[in-house]
Length: 157
Image (cartoon, rainbow, N blue to C red; front, side):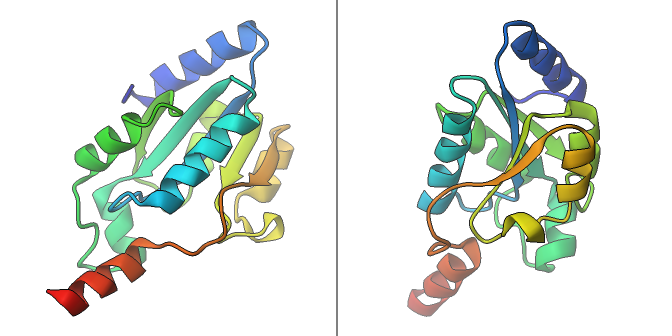
């Protein structure tokens, strides 16, 4: 379900009330590919059936980090596609350059990042620890990227 941050916090409270773990994964998810799918499936598995909230970067934040030609797909469409994955329980759009505001509001048990990070390299790692959570790396090796996919498409079009 695509929802507001307040609704995601409510879902987290409900999950905690039943003793379930809550995980936050986040990213641009521009042109969803198998690396994204494997990352989100692994994030859900880490919750042992708990709640997976996915933060999807707004169009403006993607442009700021990846350049003026990105994202390829608008934020609402990217959120809808991520929401369609069976492992995803809630999707929240966010405009900040990092996931700090999401983390402060959600206070997840796990902040799950893809294998393009190391635990020590996650910028929000110290915040997550201060909030009582853990930073975890999940997914398959970083053999897939939207940037690489776009480069390949430009080469054949």
